[in-house]
Amino acid sequence: QLPAVTPELMATCSQLPDGLMFTGDIAFVYQLPAPPVASGDESEEPAEGPKITEEERLAVVVQTIDTETALAPKGALSMRSSGAIMPNPTFQGLDAAAACNLSSFVLLNKPKLASVLEPAMEKSVDALASADTIVPKAALRVFTDDALGVVSVRSLLWPGALAFCKPGSSTWGYCYFGTGEKNIDIAFMLP
Image (tube, rainbow, N blue to C red):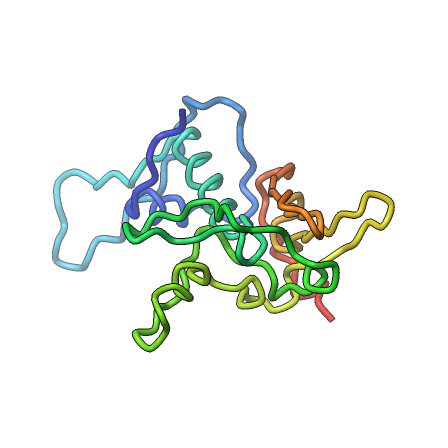
């Protein structure tokens, strides 16, 4: 079980250099430099910078990847009155044409801004942000596999992230089989 991710932990992890590889030792401790001391606030002992363990860093990376890449077909999930997101028992799947459109997918971990003008029933089914709102715009690519009858969505920002659905059926899912490295060269890959 990975440790819970807090905003402080995410802020500390964001101070690590980009492209820093994992060591493979969950007990390894990353020592960050101490914040600069303001002039006139000289103290006898130099302040020690924040520390983060490999396990905490891994938890932050896993949560970040899950937040940015977890996709579901639109309508596969619904929001209950308690605010919990649950599978929609009436979901019959997307048709083949809709499954090939990125706007037919939603981000599992990003709620849509609710409007008070929308009917409550419509809000319950359309509660998550659309996948076509992701920045940069072309970071997600849709592929069809006619042999298997599956549509997949792949992330260029997090190589190895994949979401899939089988048109005409309620089968869908997502997974990540990457190295944990964000593609910082994505600007050179986009049309």
